[in-house]
Amino acid sequence: MLKKNRLILFGLFAALCGAAAPVPEKLAPMGVYLSWEIPAALAARNQVPQRDFLEKLFALCRERHVNYLWVTNLPWDELPLARELAAKYGMRLGANCCDGKFDSYFDNNAAELLASIQQMVHYAGGDPNFTEWVLSDEPAVENAANLNFYAAQLRQADPARRPGAVLMPHTYPILAAAGLDFAAVDAYPFFAPGDPNGPHTRETSIPFYRSSLEFFGKACRAAGTEPWGMPQSFVEILGGPYRYNEAGEVIALPGSYLHWRMPTVPEIRWQFYEALRLGMRGICFYELVPIMPWNEETATRTVPEDFLWPDALLDEAVNAGPAGLTTPWGATTPQFDEIGALYQAIEPYRGLIARWEPAEFTVHWGNCPVSFFSDPVDGKIYAVAVNDDFERERTVQLEWVGGKVEPFRLPPGGGRIFEVPRP
Image (tube, rainbow, N blue to C red; front, side, top):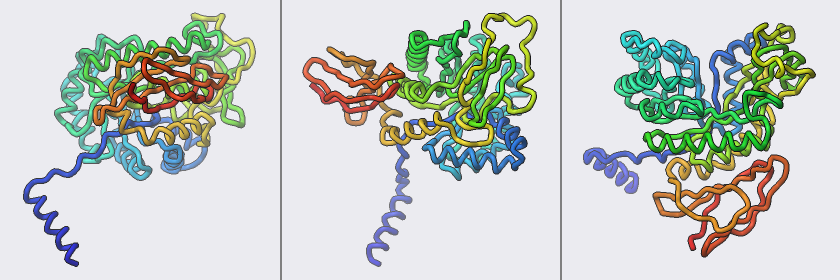
């Protein structure tokens, strides 16, 4: 009883003295992207209530250690539902819901935008799990001034939440003028075999992704913007027929233009660890749900008569993989299971990833890509090593002047975070 009274007195004393509560440790988000309008269509197709289908998706996310949900195309009045489900399943939330669309600010109508912001803030409430506003998806460089205005007005109206956006690899100059607190880059490296519009071999996909994130990270650091990676986990057919098979995979049929294919499990691994190696402080895979519509008409689609790349149309059927991290009926995919394993493995490092800084550390000899980081809290040095081979394991060996690490094995596309003993 005496001990309890002492604790009560200490609490009263701390309150009277204005003692601040301890600040929670900042943790790197490990998340997925959700286009909010798609589950409603899938729920209707599966003949279940929208909320039931959403609950199923959120439960799959929790089981796979997802702690952040990046939600877009969210109407104002459905933001409370997204907040409720995120809190229920233990996830932070970032959302776009400016009139339920991305490009409201492109109209450059300040009065309309400010009215929209008032509604956004009203439905956001004081929810501590709702931490970021997503202002735009792939804005053009010429819209930097409008984006800066949008971010400044929203930051003033809702200072508890950070404004950010998704950027394409070629729009990095927008960072210098956009005034964003965080940004993600959607550098998707795995195009369909033979696609004339993007990298589709190991020899081209790896340098495309690597250079995109490397330059993005440098641009973010120069602008004071926190860099996130948005790795690829979807299929997209830009024209022509397709169908779903019983496993929930997309079969691109002859006459279709298969643009992006689902990465393999090793390619999922590689995107994840390569993003961390290149200094990304958050990860959100695109996309949780299939973006290719699931209906009876898809097998009869045709490409337009003025299609620019007729030689890219398929001559035979191709299995492009799952269209998202879940199937149209809400089952998980091997890619989502792998992400769950990655997120579980990275859990002890989330605080470190959120704060570490690139470190200069010259490797004397090594047989894989590796980057070094310093922890500003205790000065320790850490490394991220990645296996660039998507088919074979690799025994990693690293040496530098005055030190080395014991050899270890990485699975195809795999990576590892480890502390580096100082020379």
